[in-house]
Structure formats: structure tokens, C-alpha cells
Image (cartoon, rainbow, N blue to C red; front, side, top):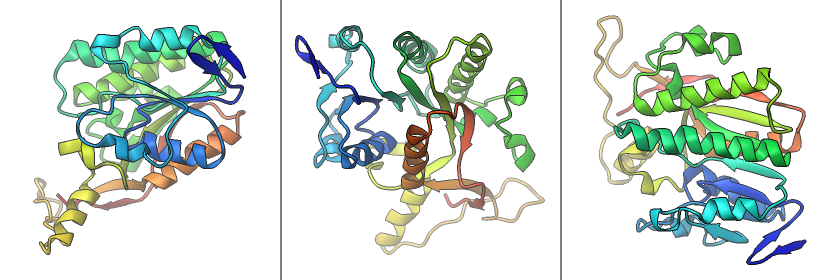
Amino acid sequence: MKDYGRFLYVTFMIIITGGAGFIGSCLQAALVARGLETVIIDKLGTQGKWRNIASHPPVHFINPNPENLDALPTFLENLDRADMLFHMGAICETTAYDGDQVWQTNVALSRKLWEWCTRTKTRFIYASSAATYGLAEKPEQFSDSPHLIQTLTPMNLYGWSKHVFDQQVLTLAKENKTPPQWVGLKFFNVYGPNEYHKGNMVSVVKVKYDEICRGEPARLFRSHRADLDHGMQARDFIWVQDVVNIMLWLYDTPSVSGVFNCGTGVARTYLD
């Protein structure tokens, strides 16, 4: 262990952006259970997100809020390297409309973290999204094959920002400008504990679960297509612990790099 002023560098320290959020906090809990030291970069806010990490606090918590914009750069400058950087933090609202803010957070920051990991030889796993597939509706249209990425047409700003970074990553990989391990995971519809703070972005599964707990019926979404009966629309859902297990497997398997789909591969009825 080395001391860099107010920061500590631990050989197997793991950095998690968005580590107090839904997927990030579940991942962080699993890493702490392994005895690994974690640093969370996130904002706790006023919606009770502290509860997500209450029983497994990190070694350091860094809040990159507008009043403390140099906190993250300063922390990284004081590190020789880390064992892994899990980049789960992002503006993930599909209704986001501030293009400049989304670009700075989802593309520019991601690129800076990639470059830091490349320079320091820190492994890098980041959250992409199935939103990059836009209006795709047939199984073959959800291919994560790198040569098909240029054919994708995201339908919202969020999906587009994730798509842009995926494209940058694959270009940098061709130029051999990568961290020692790099993985982008196109998360499909993840559900599970610790998503209560996401407002309108909570999973459909949680919405239905809450309705049933209140004694209400699980309402089916009306179909807009003549060839599809009401309630027969489908989505791919994946339990958050399965997502965490995938990331843990990648952590244990440093030889694997690439951009991959992260779902069950099974479409389930879409309730809404």
C-alpha cells in the first residue's frame, strides 16, 4: 500500500463509477464480499442511495459534483494504476434531451477514463446499452458482431451516446490503443434490488412487482401492431445478479476483451 497524500493506492484497488447506483452497488457488494478494496465515484443525492452501500462502504467515495469538478482528475493523477475500473456511471435516461451534458458524461468522460486506463495499464469494463439497437425487433438484428456496429440506428440521445463510445472503442482497438483488458457490455433490461431511486427509469419488472404488492392487477401494454396481440410484445430481461456474475467472470478472465451483449437471450412478455 502506498500513501499519496489523502489518497491510498492499493495493488488490487477497484474503481467503480456509478458505484452507489443500481448495477454499480450490486457489483460493489460482490467485490467487497471477495475482500477487495473499492473506490466509488458517484453522487449520493437525496433519494436514499446511501442505503445501497450502507453495509459495504468503499475505501473512498468521490463525488464529482459541479462544485468539485477536479475531484476525479485529482484522484486519478495520484494513482499509478488500479486493478480494474468498472465504468457504470452514465446519464441513462432514455428521455434525456441535453445533448451537451449527455456527450460530456457518456462520451467525453468515458474516453478520458479509457485513456487513463490505457496509460496506466488498468483493466476497463464499461456499461454500454441495448438502446444502441434502436428499433431492432428481430433476433438477428441484435448481433454484437463488431462489423455490424455501423448499421445500428439508435432512436434516442442516450442510445446514440452509448453507440458513439462503442464505435470509438472498436476503432481504438484496431489501433492497439487499449487497456490490457477492455470490455463493453450492452445491458438489456436489467432488474433487481437497489433500483428504487431511478424514478421513471425503473425496470418494468419493478413496476409490475410494486403493483402486485399493492394488490393491483399487472396491466398489459396495448399492442400498436396489427400482427401482434395485446400483451404479446417481448423484451429481454436479465436479473442484476446475473449481470454482476458476468462482470465477476470477466474480472477473473483477463484474456477476454470486446463489446458484447449482456442479456438472457430470451424475450419475455412486455408488461407496462
